[in-house]
Length: 368
Image 1 (cartoon, rainbow, N blue to C red):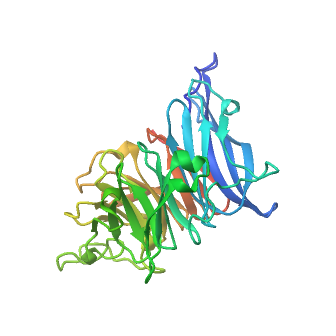
Image 2 (image 1 turned 90 degrees about the vertical axis):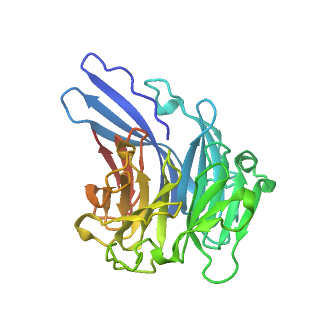
Image 3 (image 1 turned 30 degrees about the horizontal axis):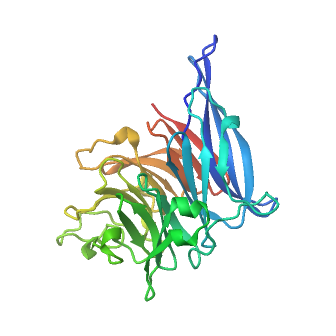
C-alpha cells in the first residue's frame, strides 16, 4: 500500500518507517483463508543494518482463496483495493491511508469493506462474476475501471464506483469465449481503453474497449506460446524445457512505455515483449539455468533505462524460490527461499521489495 515517509530521526539517529502490506494466506489452524493488513516496521539507525518487525494490524476471513490483488490511488489519500477470488467473486474496498511523515497504521481508516452479518468475514459485492476462478484483476489508474479475466474464457470490465455499491449494472462482460481451450491466464491495462491478455494456449492479445470484443492484434505465431519460438529460421533464443503446457502466468506493463510488457511463464521464461510486434521478445534465462515456472514480474524502477539489448530491468519470482532481477540477457538472485515465491511488490523508487512464499514466509529486501 502507499507508504508515508518516516518521521525525522531521533537524537540517537533512529527512524522507523511503517510499510503497510496486503497479505492473503491459508491458516491451517483456523482452516480458513485470511486477508490481512500488516505493518512492516523498518527501523534504521546510522551506521547499522535496518531491523524489521511484522505485525498484523487487522485481519478478516475470506470466503475463498484470494488469487490476485491490486491497489490504485484515488483522490486525496484514498486508495482502491481490488481482490479477485478463486470462486469467481470480486471484492472492492476503499481505504484512507495517511501520508504525513511519521503516520502510523492506527491512522488508516477503512471507508468501504463489505463484511458478513457477524462482521468477521469478507463479503464480496460481486459474487460469481466468473464461472470458476478469476485469473487476474487490474485497475486502470485514470478511469478506475476494473479488469478481470478468468479460466472460464470471460473478460469483465467493472465500474469501480458502481462495483463498490454492489451494483450489477456496473459490470460489462466484454468477451466470453465458448469453444476450445478458452481460459485466460492474465490481463493488464495498457491505456485508458486498451488492455492485454495472455491465454492458456499461449501468446498475447491486445484489445480496445472502443473496438468491440475482437482483439485488435496478437503476437506472431512464430514466436511461440511464451516467446521462445523460431524467428526467421534462426533459433537464437533459449532452449527451454517445459514442465507443463507453455503459457504466460504474469504480465507487467512498463509505467512510461505501454508498448513494452514483461512476461513470466513456464519453463523459467522471463521476457520483454514489444506490443508493436516489430521486434522479437527478449528472453532471459534464470540464475543457474533453472527451468522453474515464473509466477510474478515487475519492471524494476531502478532499471528503467533500456540496456544495450534494448530492454529495461525486470524483477521476477519463481516456483523454485528465487526472487531475482533480469537485465538484458542476464539475471541474478536477490533473495531465495525453500518455498515457491508466489508474489511480490516493489516501491516506487525500487529500494524496497516485499515477497511472500508458499510457506507463509514474508521476505523483505532493501536495495541501494
